[in-house]
Image (cartoon, rainbow, N blue to C red):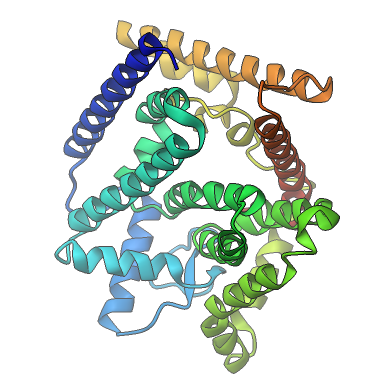
Length: 373
């Protein structure tokens, strides 16, 4: 790497880290609250205190749909208790306060992001590290994940573990490293799924399909480590399964009832595909849900010029994401996705295949499940 390029990369990375730290501290300080203000947060904090006060071990996650009252147990809940186990741990480490739990969540999320960036540096070099650091430092999803204990945020944070493990499983030259990564793949996804139910119908089937497509290439050779990982994943659900058997599968029946209710209301329910296709860096994607009218009203429905200024960057970020997406697909399907290094070319192609499988699997399985998660 030329000295000038190296210096630019170092400066970009350093400035990005400083901006990232400033934004996190600024956002956290601006949103200090004694207890959750949003409805999901209130339900989750109530359930947290229920587990602590009753000294019960969490075996279920959050509600699939918000109940009418805090103490209602009629609604279906996510199988597996990892979300509340992690929430309880953060709550006690944070001095038994909601703000303390939020701060611990901030630290753990940033730590996972830092581990990911360090891995990017080791695997892809300084330039890629600098670019990824710049993108992540202003990414609203990553900033939000650290600022709230909300259950989908753990899903994003854990993806910073899953992606390196998947990569190392595919390309590790060391047999021991390949075995360890093969064992870790499904347990990581199991914990993610215990935080957000939709992962049962997106990343998990995507990984299974991807491994099947690589059966002769490496899946068959690493079947023992993969099966071991599946078994460990099963163990994380064992308390839930035992409880269901003891209670006539009450929780599972509630999930099936929830599906029946959604089926009766909707014909199809596609996933929020924009969050998969466009990872916008300066605005959250929830504005897409309300359509173009809501998007325009959010930015132009008030008198502040700053919102119009922000809207310009909003449009630019979407345009950039779409351009990169089309550019990548064009080179992939025309077999022009090449680099000067054959190994790097194969890595790019394999990761793009996984991304395509992930998109297709998410649409098909999510719409088939139709549970409204």
